[in-house]
Image (cartoon, rainbow, N blue to C red; front, side, top):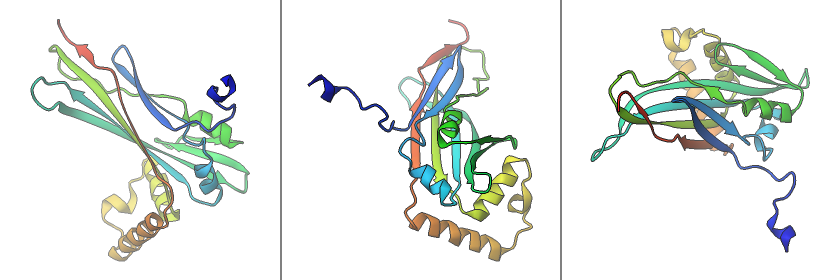
Length: 199
């Protein structure tokens, strides 16, 4: 009977998102995103993954709803390179890393992000962080646009140089990808409450 209560070795880990604090500095960590294999299969089929992180700072208010203070967001793209037979991770700022196996990519995705988001006032107050992660698949056009944005080129999407027809085609492609039933993952986590300023 003890065997029934122990978890299986090598069992798929459920995806999780956590926010921990190191002196009031938040660390956002996702784990198990590739554990069930469906996102790895999609990457091998030519569908890159977009990981969109958002970290919000909230102020605790008694008797009212808590007050949103500000947020920071960042993206990463993971894809399979069939010619090199490896996986590529593109982080914000254009940093590109290559991994030989899905397990190595999963380990890289598990590394926490330390985010510099702090309350701006010095008065005594209680705060907490809320982190959100959305993992979605991209088509080729989305990938090109996001790759340019990650490397700092806002391109025609922001400058208004793209045609209306191109924008409609991209929108139609996104709708078709969503209708195809490709998996999405949404995770959310909250940090412990912390106090700033004088007592």
